Length: 468
Image (cartoon, rainbow, N blue to C red; front, side, top):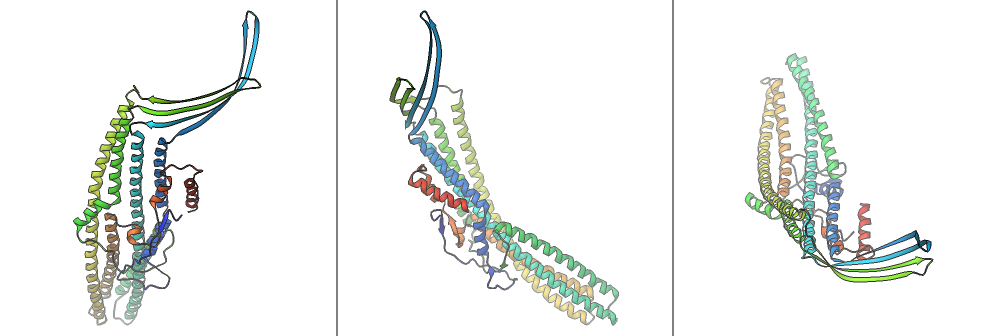
């Protein structure tokens, strides 16, 4: 398996939220989650297998330049009865025939070689498709990780708020006993406490859903997720980022290779109307069982074949290849615009998330000051219980908004990496064994047989892959 996977060095990918629990010895980082998602993903395994199937298409095309040798045999029982002037004769015999035929392509105006080049371009396109899937897998893991963090914080805030409201209710009841507040104040505190319990139950439900998404994306239950410490490095120039994406995003590279495939397929279709020259050989042996008749034959020659009329099929195939080429060029045009749009949208989301986080910090500061002030004024009788509860709810909402905005900043930042084509295990320096897309291709590109040295190496690779 060393030929299929190459080991990368581990680099810490630490990022941080303002609100969060302290890390412990068994803490799980975002890098840990991304590495697990990369190793766990069935979607990646599926597309790696599809890439290996595309590699085999190259080997199949290469085999067209190799000799084709086949054998045949038959056992025939012949019998008959003939009548003539001299009488009736019965005849019967049992013959066995064995033959070996061989053909070798000598010249086909480059059609087979064009087919090989077309399949190679298709392999390159499939590789880029695998990278695109890898980005999707890692972005999903980032989102799942951050959403568990978000919902954990929401639950923590709701619990703290519930405890505070219980204290507020006890205080309201004590003040009611001494005549400082009315029954209405107690009822308002009870109402807010009931709403807080409902809010906590909803937050816990959201957390359970986030945990299930984490399990699906990463492959296991989340541990003690530590808050990240820094954002990934990003370019501040949106237009420069768009130019980078157009050059290196896997969707763009895949579309370019698909155009190259379509161009080569036009040449393949045109070459199909031209003659094909083959070297043909045959050896055969025939022997009568129980008799003395036998025959030994052999032949070698040059065959030249070519189409004369096939009902317009070859012309239609050429026109079809041209139409497919035009379709792939149109797809390339659309992918270019979509990639640029996605980069612009990703940066817009990041700017909005950062602005929301900055506003959230100011909102928490102001709401904290307001809550502390109203609570002190309530102790002096200048504020009602409802005023305290309202400012407390505003503080709760401000803290929740800040947490959500901070999470959105990190999700948006990794969204920018995905939009520019830089969200891969290699780019992130994850400590995982990355899949080497060229290793399997190098083993099969020359179309080895099962009995060859390369064929035996392939058997070992396939057995190892089957265990994963």
